[in-house]
Amino acid sequence: MNSFSPKVVRINLAERSYDIVIAPGAMGDSTSYRDLPTATTAVIVTNTTVAPLYAARLRQALLARFTDVKVVALPDGEQYKTWQTLNLIFDALLGGGCDRKTVLFALGGGVVGDMTGFAAASYMRGVPYVQVPTTLLAQVDSSVGGKTAINHPLGKNMIGAFYQPVKVVCDLDTLRTLPPRELSAGLAEVIKYGPIADLDFLVWIEANVVALLSSDSIALGYAIKRSCEIKAWVVGQDEREAGLRAILNFGHTFGHAIEAGLGYGEWLHGEAVAAGMVMAAKLSQRLGMVDQGFVERLAALIRRAGLPVVGPHLSDVDNAGRYLELMRVDKKSEGGEIKFVLIDGPGTAVVRGAPDALVREVIDACCLRE
Ligand code: NAD
Ligand code: GLY
Image (cartoon, rainbow, N blue to C red):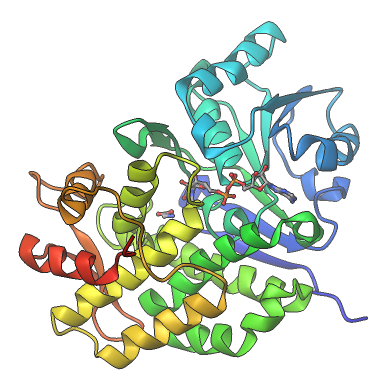
C-alpha cells in the first residue's frame, strides 16, 4: 500500500525558526528529536484520553535523548482549558524539580497544545517546548505559529502569549484513533485556508473530501502539508498578528461566540468555526464582496465534511444581540467595534467592520430555528 512520504515545512522567524515534520510514525522515532536543545529532563504534557494511547511510545523515543522523562496527564476537554488546569502543569514542574532547561512536549490536540505552550512561555520565564499534535486540527493549525492560551468565562483564548515551539512533530499514524467527529472538526480548519488564501487548495479539498473523511493517509498528509505551508507563509510575515495573520481567524469571530455562548465543550471548536465560516461568507456576500454562488459552494463543502452550516440559538430573547455581545469580547475588536475576517473575492480575505444591523440580519438568516 502507498504511504505518505515524510515532509518538512519550515517556519521562518529568524532565531525563532523551526521545522514541522510530517510523517507516519514520526512521534515514536527518536531521530525526530535529535536536534532539540540539550537537557536532562523532558516533561510530556498530555491528557487522560491521549496518555494511554501514546505517552509510553513518546516516552520511549525521548529516553534515547533525555535521562528523565516525566508524564503529566491533564483532564480532557475544552472546559478544562483554565488557570486551574494550567496550575497542574506548574505543580508537576515545580514538584519534579524541573529547571529552566527542561523541555516540555505537548502530546495531544489543540487544548493540550495551547496550555503546554502557555506553561512553557511562563515557567521560569520561558522553557523550550515541542508540539506533538495528535488531532487533525492541531496538525493543520494550533500546533503551528506560537499562539498559546487558556479560556476565560467571558471570552475564548483571552489569556495567553505568543511563544514559538522549537519543533512540531506531526505523526499521521496518530490520526487513526481519532473519532470521526474530531476528524471533521479538523477539516474545518483545513477548509478555511482555501477561501482566505488558496483557491486551488479549495478545489483540491472539494475533490478529496471523501478520502479525507475516510482517513486516507496520502490525502491527509497532503492536506496537513499544504495547510502548514499556508500558515507558515502567513506567520512568517506577521508573527504577532499586527495585520495579515488575522485572516487565519476566518469564521472564528462568530465561532468563538458560539463556543462561549453555549459553554466551552458543547460544540467542538472546529464545528463552531464551520458554522462561523458560513456566517462570515454570508456577511461578505451581503457587503457585495462575493456572490451567493460562492457562499453556497462553501456551505456545500462544509456540509460534506460532516460539519454544521447553521449556528445555534444562544438566546431566546435576542439571539443576534447575544452574538454581538459575545463577539465584542474578541481580540480583533477595536474600541468596541467588531472586526470580521471577510472574503474579498474567492481566495482573498480582508479584516473589517460591518454595520450591526447587517450582522443581525446575517445571524438571523444563519441560525437554527428551535
Ligand atoms: P482537543 O484538544 O480537545 O482534542 C479533541 C479530542 O480528541 C479530545 O478529547 C482529545 O483527548 C482527543 N484526542 C486527541 N488526539 C487523539 C487521538 N489521536 N486519538 C483519539 N483521541 C484523541 O481539540 P482540538 O480540536 O485538537 O483543538 C481545539 C483547541 O485548539 C481549541 O481550544 C482551540 O481554541 C485551539 N486552537 C488553537 C489554535 C492556535 O493557533 N493556537 C488554532 C486553532 C485552534
Ligand atoms: N489559528 C489562528 C492563528 O494561528 O493565528
